[in-house]
Image (tube, rainbow, N blue to C red; front, side, top):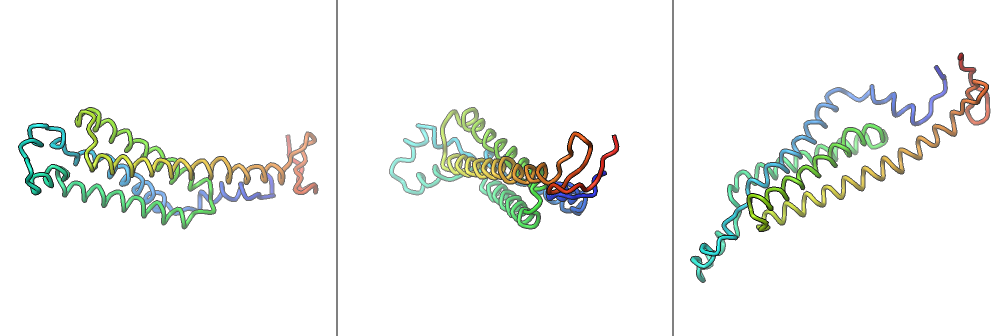
Length: 196
């Protein structure tokens, strides 16, 4: 076993140092975010599509306001609360473990990306099936929010996985070169001979 430790090796070893309750809480936060994304489409209203209802509303401002509201407002609050709790938890753990790229990629960015995509798909499926392709106000807002979350998570995942972590891995390879002769060199200096 090599006695030299690169930054990448440190990140991998630090995975064992992350408290179990952090792993449990971040899993909870990503799932609560997903729950919020999945609950929201249940609040979309189809009243806006019904021509008979629109015509029956006439010029009454109250009736037009009812047409623009969401179905099951308490459920919308629960979904919003789930999204906020999940997002705040993910951001707080990202701040805490931001220097361990391996952990934030595998515990925050990848699950967040996949859950955001699932929320976007759920929203679009609901709109094009149950809502017959009509985007209500809440459907538009939900599509925009889940789309933005998907873009943010995609950006963070790509930056951390394909740029930041790759730089660390390249440094790892540069610092820890095992030659064909089985010698581990760090910075050109022989550190240890690997038994083959």
